[in-house]
Image (cartoon, rainbow, N blue to C red; front, top):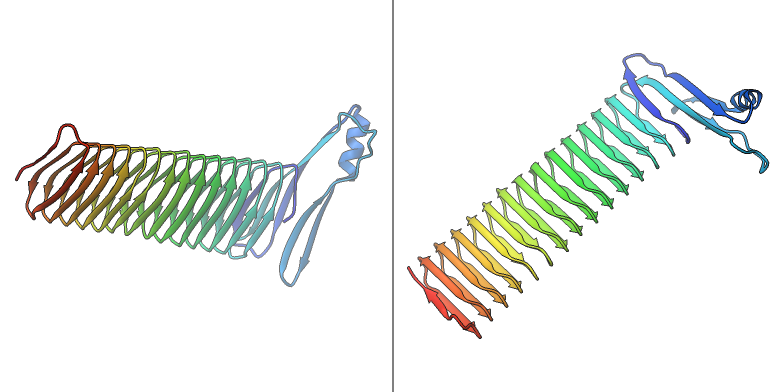
Amino acid sequence: MAHQHGDVVVRTHALPEVRVHAKIRASAETRAQAEDLVGRIQIEVLEDATGVSVRTVYPELGMGRRNVSFSVDYDIAMPETAPLSVRNGFGNVAVAGLKSTAEVVNAHGRLTVSDVKGDTRLENKFGAVEVSGIGGALSITNANGVVGVTGVNGALTISNRFGDITVRQARKPGTIVNGNGKVDVSEAAGPLTITDSFGAVVVNTLAGDLTVNHRNGTVEARAITGGAELNGSFGDITFSDVGGRVIVVGNNGRVSGTVAKGPTRVRNSFGDVVLREIHGDLDVQNANGAVRVEDVRGPVVIKTRFGEVVATTIRGGATIENANAAAGSRCGT
């Protein structure tokens, strides 16, 4: 389907046919001009061996026409097992109940897709994208709008700019890239890679490994069954209940963590490092911030400058190097 200036709603049925309902609207300075414009708008429906295509053909208006507008809204019923391709502009698109693949490219409108069994590729700009119940892989490219995803059984790829991203129940590996917006993921599977800037990143309950690369915002990772690699700047980094190895690289923010079941390495500057219940080895290097660690079951190596070091309940021995710390260092078992 190829369309612009109007909404598109696509439903499915079990019949081997396509039903097209079009609502044509037009306005002009006079009723006669509006009726003439409606009569010149064409709805082309073509059928061949590959399927059925629908195209909207609008009349060309001369430069002298003023106060003229038009639109066509579609309500389409199609076979549930047929693939779908939609191109639209300046209108909302809604698709539901498809047992095949879907490809939708839209602009200047909301894009809503639900209950699609096959692979799904979506593009939008200047509008929100809301997706649920995808049986295959899902790819979303959006700009200037929020993205919300719930329930994806295949691989997930999301790219967005100037809008928040929310993901729930993504059951296969995923890649998320965002700019100028928050990323919030929960009840998902890994490995998951998130790249973001100018917005918080929150990951809660992930079955697998997590990698976050972030600038200008906070990072929170909770209940990660695999390893976690968290890279951030100009924002705090927090982790808790990580089942594997933890690697944190921070800058201009606090690093805090509770319960890491694998070896843990932290590199930070211009912010405190506060860690508890580290089950493996711990290696911390910090500058211009305090280091406080408690209940570490493996060997501890801490190097810092311009900050206090406090280490308590260290079961595997400790090596501490501290420079330029007025309060000194303390270590207890």
